[in-house]
Length: 71
Image (cartoon, rainbow, N blue to C red; front, side, top):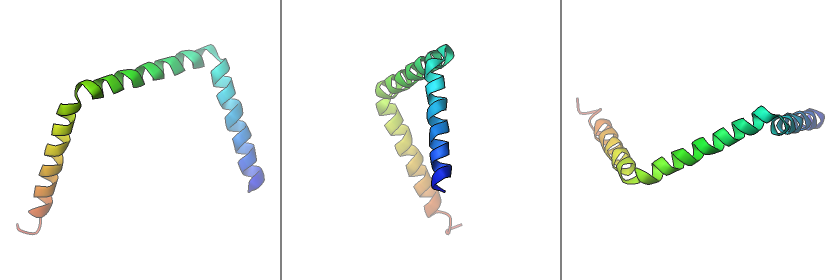
């Protein structure tokens, strides 16, 4: 089991190193980072609306769960 885990660790490490060395890997990493930044910015901008929406959804779920046995 230990040899298997060590082998998988080495394979994963080599794959990560190959991705980081490959030019496409660098572009993909930059694209992923930019997407994460955009998502974080959207969450910050629409924080109040997101909290309101989640609150309404949970209120609806709670009321529906409360009404399950009453019908």
